[in-house]
Image (cartoon, rainbow, N blue to C red):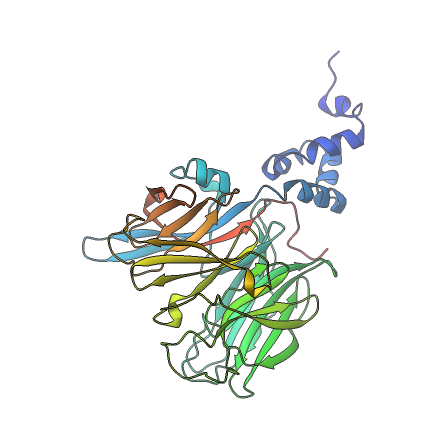
Length: 397
């Protein structure tokens, strides 16, 4: 007489089942939860979720924000924005391939703030000129397709002329190992008090909390970069003795770094070798393989990337690449800046995205070779966020 699956599984030790399941991808586990109540209980048990996450932590993916580019013969337009998970190995080994459409997630006006342990933090806002702006976040697990409710609103009064809802306030997302809490941080320049205010929202909390204020460091980009347990923004050092209201100097720029475990901040100086930058808009920071990087155009002839080898040590800034656009097979400086999306595990190959012509450029630092491949499906790729598929819940535990 044949045994049923449930009868057969009853002979398998529970610890062996846990060991086997912990090695499987999340997609498979989401299917296997329907096998029996015991498996479902195992898969969503917090200790199993932690064990599975530890085994998955080396399998880094990217969440890529992309839009379809539409051309009517006269002008370009953009379609809906989607967030799509990609394997980094897939991008380097088979970059022209696409992912299953079932993995597409329409952003519907949200943007991606960051990702930790498989949770993606989405940001949204509402407001019109001369009104109070409202910001909120939601937590989304792409692998389990679970999403939290909207957080309480963070209300911002645009007291200064020229307030830009997408650049006058910054956000970051991290997991605090000491408190075991997922935290969203918001940095806001208050022009009335001449202070930078740092606000925090905890996953499952009921309000935003102003944890400290500090001398004013107006940030230049909305999303902070998570490196070494800190959130980092490119910012203007208003306390600098040589600060001027000009766009053609680079000296007052610093990296504003917030540590939520200690509720402290510091600023990091830019590389001493940084020169001939026409304006602040040319400089951007990014995290590549857990290291803080800075990139910019130089004289409309070269693309330059710096890397901080040891976080917080300003002397560790190292020139990662300085290559002419011509060598990168770009005949003229792009209107939109090249975007460093990722770097290979051995640190030799950088993947750059050129949204002017919808190409991926792979630059090998060791042999100076360049390979250019079209982005699949005539898409623009705007942002890449490190991501690990996991079972972590977007709801309060």
